Image 1 (cartoon, rainbow, N blue to C red):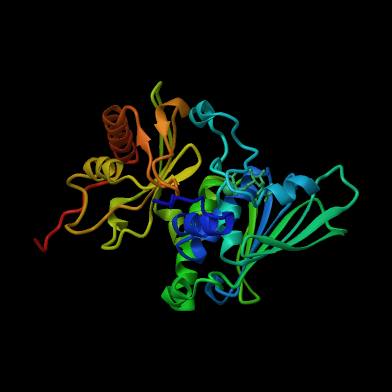
Image 2: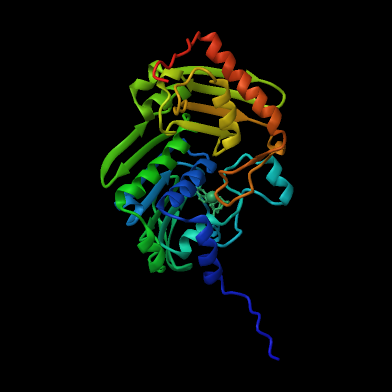
Length: 339
Ligand code: ADP
Ligand code: MG
């Protein structure tokens, strides 16, 4: 019998991997913003057209790439962020899988312009369907601009599966919020279809929350702060009277990364016990810092699900920190007369 196993060509492997990394335009936004942050940028511009279907561009003033790195960046498993598996437990970058750019370039038209600080000129590269179409020397400022056009141009089924521009923009905005909230030390501009949508200066955490969600937040926020060997917590909860039916304003960040955690959410809700009207959810913006060796972020490609070594202790500390804040700021219980 003839042998039947063969290695998939790179562009096919990339396209398959892209299915995991890139679900929709918002996934591209997340990856590009994270790369800009990892490059040390303190000013980032996001430009989106037609819900990200036509264009997603991120321009940063970070470190930029050399000509060779600019080409290598699009290879699978090409990363400057880790060298060995152990590095995963001492991470201070958002990326490490070296998959995002390879995946994006497999399913979109990508225009890259990049320049390192000490280089005289920069590099421009055009890529589509994993292959480099053009490369030239350009005059460009320090940093990187990456434009992703016509997402899923070569996978019609995926392109047709995208929702309306409005819905895709909402997902992009959610991703933008998550990144902007945890990096108030970076300025962000966000343009949608040519119009300014957000313009966030460098500011404090509190100012950033107010800037993103509006002045109404000013009276709502109660600070939370706790410092233990297991975790450092800071951030804000919203006063119980502002709890809402929807879960819109609930944010956990662990080591500067937005995470989802039903378990920790339960800890917060438990701390609010007796203070909430039925069926309402408290708002919160909580920034946790743990030893990187005690958190596993490599459970899922999008890295929003994480695993903490000592979840139970974390739960208890979080709950008591929030109870303490609620008490200290003398947040009176709201009696629910309807029930
Ligand atoms: P990862 O972020 O996991 O390393 P990516 O595919 O997102 O993988 O990026 C590959 C590499 O390209 C990065 O490790 C980095 O060296 C380089 N890179 C990507 N985006 C930028 C950027 N905006 N500025 C500088 N370097 C970048
Ligand atoms: Mg990355």
